[in-house]
Image 1 (cartoon, helix red, strand yellow):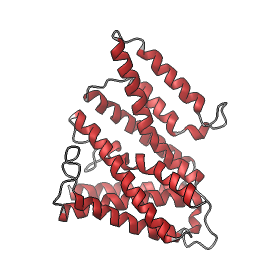
Image 2 (cartoon, helix red, strand yellow; image 1 turned 180 degrees about the vertical axis):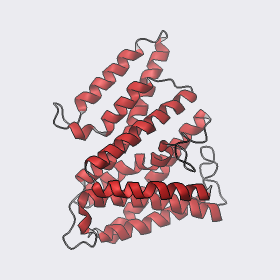
Image 3 (cartoon, one colour; image 1 turned 120 degrees about the horizontal axis):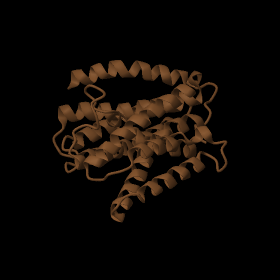
Image 4 (cartoon, helix red, strand yellow; image 1 turned 120 degrees about the vertical axis):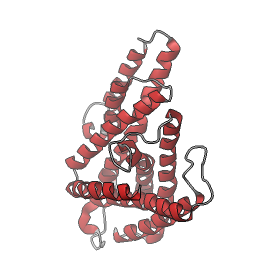
Amino acid sequence: MLRDRARSAALLIPPLLVVLWLGGPWMIGLVAIAVALGAREAFRLLDAAGHPSFAALGIVLALVVALADVVASLPGGSGLVLAAIGIVLVGTAALTRADPRDGLASFATTIFGALYVGLLGFVNRLGAQGPPLADDAPLGFLGPERAWVLLLVLCVWAFDTGAYLVGRRFGRRPFMAHISPAKTVEGVLGGTLAVTAVAALVVAGLGYAWPAGAVLGLVVAAAAQAGDLAESMLKRAAGAKDSGNLIPGHGGVLDRVDSFLFAAPSVLLYVVVVFR
C-alpha cells in the first residue's frame, strides 16, 4: 500500500506543481477535469447507495457550480443564470419518473451531488480572491494566485500525510469508527500537528504573522478531516472501498480531492477575513 502511494505521488505531484506554476487557464482546466471525473464517481456511489440520480445532468451542473466565476460576465453574475437553468433542467427531468417519490429523490440527489463536488471550484476562487502579498515576502515571487493555492495544497497534503504516517505507526484509539474504521485519534492529532506547522511556516513566507497561520492550520485540519469523512460516509453507504480505481494506491479522483472539497472554501473564508 505504501509503495503504491509513493508511486502515485511520484506520478501526480510533478504535473500538479507544473499546472500550479502555470496558473490561469491551466488551473481552471485541471479543476474542470477533476470535477467531471469526481462527479461521475460520486453519482456512481450515490446510485450504489440506493439514491438514483440524473448523472449526466449532475456532472454538467457540477462543472457550472465549480467554474461559475469563469462566466461572471453573464447576466446575473457568477454563472448564477447557468446554475439556475441546470436546476430547472434537473427538476424537469424528475417529472419523467413514474413515481413522484422517485422523481423527488432523483431531483434532490442530483442537486446534492453537483453542489458537493462543485465545491472544488473554490480552489480557483482562492487563487483569484486571495489578498496581495507583501513586496518583501520570502515567497512573494509566486504571486497571490499561485501562493494561496500552494498554501491550500501543502496544508491538505501535510494533514493527510501526517495523519496517515502517525496513525499507521502509533494509532490505537478509533476515531469515527462507524464511518471509517481505519481512522485513529492519534492519526488525527498527528495530521493536525503537521498541518499547523506547515501552515505557520508558509503563511510567514507569504509575509503574514505565523500565529495566524497556525490557527489556519487548525481550520484546515478540521475541514480536511470532515471532507475525508464525508466521502467515507458516502463510500460506506455504497459498500465501496474506493470511489474508483483510476489512481493506483489512491482509488479514484474523489478519493484524492475529498479533503479539498471542504478545505478550499474554509481556507478562502479565513484568508479573506483575517489577511485583509
